[in-house]
Image (cartoon, rainbow, N blue to C red):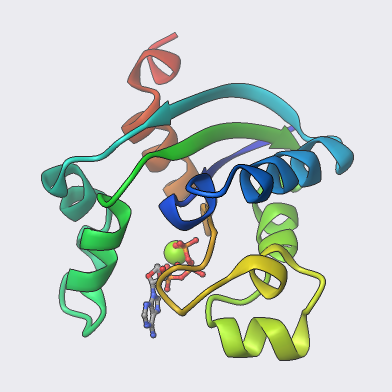
Length: 141
Ligand code: ATP
Ligand code: MG
């Protein structure tokens, strides 16, 4: 099985029914939940996690949004977990998500291009990095 790192972002955690719906999507699609935790980022942690986007026009608002309230992180296991979870998330941009993939998590719950409900690792390298970022104790096991 492959591992991926999934985040339920602050816009979704703020609404218990949305958090519950995302959790149900994880369970219904037979992901194995290897670890999960609820946490609140400092601005510094948010900046560090999204370092790769530091030159982009949306970086400041992304960093502030991700530190604006609690989130939930999961290590998920599944066959092809990385691409499967990203297909369930739907496209990054909410307009595209609503029009091309309305059943996806972002198509259903996404608010804006920034407040788009969920995150998923985009490669095996980023999955390893992100799992270590959220769950250092897991990576050392
Ligand atoms: P994520 O990394 O959260 O899973 P993604 O891989 O689909 O999303 P990235 O290009 O990695 O998209 O962008 C990271 C995050 O930055 C997006 O999820 C979104 O919250 C924000 N973002 C990306 N593009 C834009 C944009 N054009 N306008 C506003 N925010 C954006
Ligand atoms: Mg990404």
